[in-house]
Length: 378
Ligand code: ACO
Image 1 (tube, helix red, strand yellow):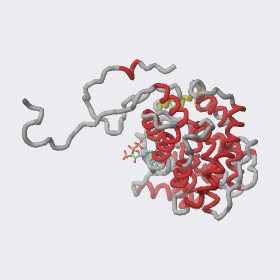
Image 2: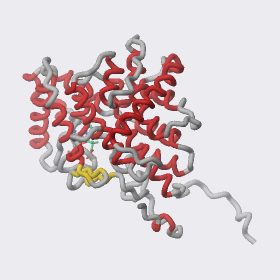
Image 3: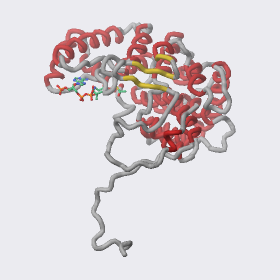
């Protein structure tokens, strides 16, 4: 049960400004907690590492518990998502041609906007079901291929890959994508989740709220980082060039992509979980072995050149490897992130709805004052 007492406190005088809202507690949540100092991500009472073997549907059941109108278990969620993917596929079919001039994330935004508030399916289920359907259809259209109809009997990760490739994916790939979706399902009050909660607080409705979340995720400071990790691996090219390439990049003052984090100082638990998923995906081309060699050298050179700054591998490094290995095109990565984060957005919107408090901070006026005496002065 959410404690609302703090939300009902009388308005306080505004004493300080915090432009990025750093240090401001803007919501109370039972959903997840990011403990950067300890390198922990807690999702509804579970360390992320303990959820690594859970299915995405089981994590949805955990996040939606007591918040969604119908408390569904893992199996019921799997079936409901399957049926909802079929509904979403009809929406994609009617609108796909309208996405041709858009980037993949803009195309996803357009298709999600077509979900109607009068839709009878529970909106949180339809929103989660729709992202893989739309993402796969958008990626295929950009490759001049027709969309693949959903298979309602499959789990979300298996059907996502099947709709992307047109053939069933192997169990290792399905498991790796499932782990990825679980890993990014929720992460405290990040920018997109906050955006979704602000919209939800106006009672605008779930689809409008999660589309707001997607719009925030679209920005390169939030959801667009894994592509550059692959660009870096491509630029290094071969094992003999790893050390000199990294040393030159640092000498030029560049950042090594996929290392360091603003909040996680000791370790990024999401990186550790995805590292496990990646190690099960040994590829013939040796890309993963090569990436691991780059990672080891990068950690060594960062420790040497930046001894005062603990810089560890972050979630983007392994995200790039997982999504590339299971066959997503690089320009779809943000949409795949949205497929996972939709779990958190929907849960936060449901939770925000229960607190029933409009989010309405204040600004500090620093513009000019009108000249002359106030019209209110006696
Ligand atoms: N490579 C080289 N040096 C780095 C890196 C890096 N990846 N990250 C931080 N540093 C160095 C900085 O150069 C700086 O060194 P200096 O004090 O000698 O000038 C020092 O560490 C502190 O830099 P800040 O920008 O203050 O560190 P912060 O922790 O705020 O930065 C950030 C976090 C932006 C993620 C940074 O580590 C970075 O740019 N990493 C590379 C890009 C990346 O991987 N982004 C994805 C992050 S994961 C996510 O957002 C979901």
